[in-house]
Image (cartoon, rainbow, N blue to C red; front, side):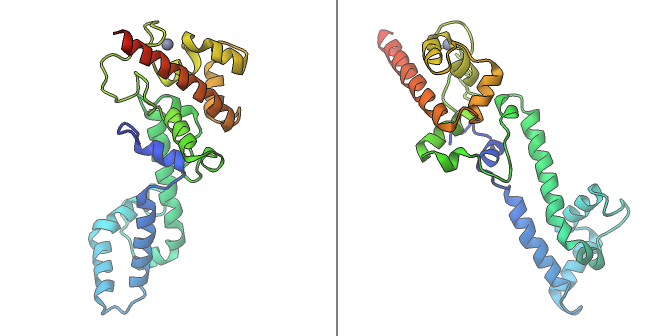
Amino acid sequence: MPVNTTNYCVLGELGLQPLVCYTFKIQISYIYKTLKLGQDRIPYKITKMCMEKNLGWAQFLRRLSIKNGLLRERDLLTSDFIQENFGLFSSLLMIDVKSKFEGRVNGAEKHLLYKYLRPNLEEPQGYFAECTYKESLMIFKLRTESYDVEARPYSGKQFINCRVCHSGEPETIAHFVAECSFFSNIRKKVFKKGILFQTELIALLNGEYTWKKLISFMNKMIKVRDKKLRIGEFAL
Ligand SMILES: [Zn+2]
């Protein structure tokens, strides 16, 4: 993946949960087991001490429980509380993780397209099952704006305007795929119109015209763009 690919895009496209979800489940199961041990056992004593002094994992779990109304601000964790609510903790963490994920997607200042692309933390996007690796990679890069256009977020490029149509517009994914006048003939052939509206661009990138149609359209677009940019380089 290009270095500018954000973590939340990777998770949203692949349907993966952040690592904290896996480690939390393992850790909380271990804590639960230690509470079943005899009170003279060291793991039991350490677990009790973490709860009483609100240390490490206990601080994290206590904060999560307070946030979700299971504990009051003045309460500390207890063995009974953990044993009674053990089955709930992973779901609470998932709610928290999802809310942070949505906050990152919706609060992003640069990857603006992604807010409309229905990313999902728990299910991979459909194109991974339908398309080849190479095709999936192309769709991934288009959806997450990590495809190498001039105005790719965080690319560090100083000149970000479209070098294909010279309109003075930044070459974003939206410009390239939906608006750039240089490709209007290809759009007319595929969509019967020279420019795509934003809703049509979103539908296209969401696979609503089918993933295969997106791939065949983009292969034509990329071939023409690459050729045009190669000719431009020779002319310099
Ligand atoms: Zn252009």
